[in-house]
Amino acid sequence: MTVLAITECRIVESRDQFDAPSGEVFGFEAVRVDTDGTVTPAKGSDATESNVAGFAVIESDRVGQAITVMRDGLLDVGNALSAVTMYAAIYVSDTDGQLSNDAGDSTVDVILGRVVPGWGSLTADKLLLIKKGG
Image 1: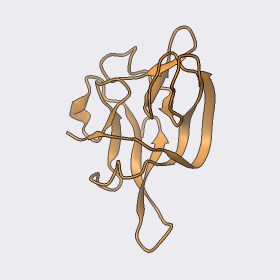
Image 2: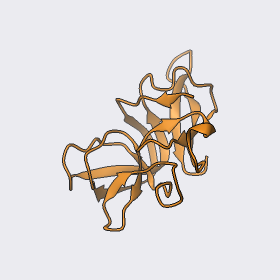
Image 3: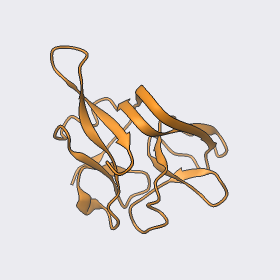
């Protein structure tokens, strides 16, 4: 089990994103749209909670703050992927908003993306390709 500790996030390429108000305070996490239209952390615990809309690329520090949610694109998440194998699937875990590279960390397996190479130098950086369903 490897729950990914994502503490930074930089958009490398965005192909599909939207802005919405946050329903609670949270960091860089998998999110879903709640019944009131706000964005809240998603988790793989059941069908409702695992209806993932994307990944919050902006941290929320107050309820109602406008945040950006990426549905399709590339993210640089710092060193969070350093221990993960290239091209590994990244799942939404049973913990609010958290991602994992182990399908066993969730009751409902939802692939949010994959680890892909990003070539900015002679060695590849590990980037997170966000695309619900992998």
